[in-house]
Length: 271
Image (cartoon, rainbow, N blue to C red; front, side):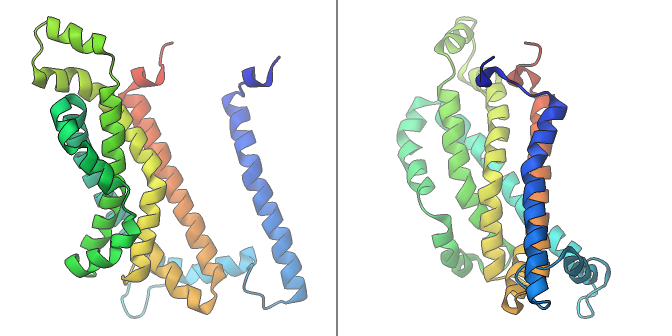
């Protein structure tokens, strides 16, 4: 039996996947205990009890100034910005990517322009966005859109361009127009690819969001992390980072399930 042919079952895969996380948690607990044994007031590696105590106030106690539960207000604000931005990214990428993928003339005209936009570091444009759109949510959403959409457009256009010519020729032989080719041949194959592209873009999208919130915001997960860093509040920073990771994982799983249920044929169902 070759190693490349060993395929763990689902339960075994979950167990193997949890081992690295468990190992990291154990190493952290030992390191935290060792540091606090030497210095009980150490802030670099807070104990689980210290993190629970610090987060309790943010989770369950309303802020005296705003009257909000800070942790949940931060979460809702960040998810609203991220959700709006990814929605705009998906719609824009689907529209432009379909046009570039289906129409060779459009690809020849605008392909280089999209590539040029894609290679610009989005973070470098953040000051420009704040100047143009102000310090509100518009600039934050625009940063994510500029950072993610060109990648999705290029990936989607390349995927549509790679559709076998036999499919297009057969459709045209049966009398399909350009619109029918786009809607009946290209679109069904583009949608699962778009979802896969959004899943791959979740990491960069969170980076852009946290960066924008850290610079100019009064609520949000990124804002809170950079606010408390001046006090070396690792007992808040670590739970916030862990929560962002959990949210990203949940979004990824949700998108994966959506793709499998809506486009089972694209995932080899029934093979």
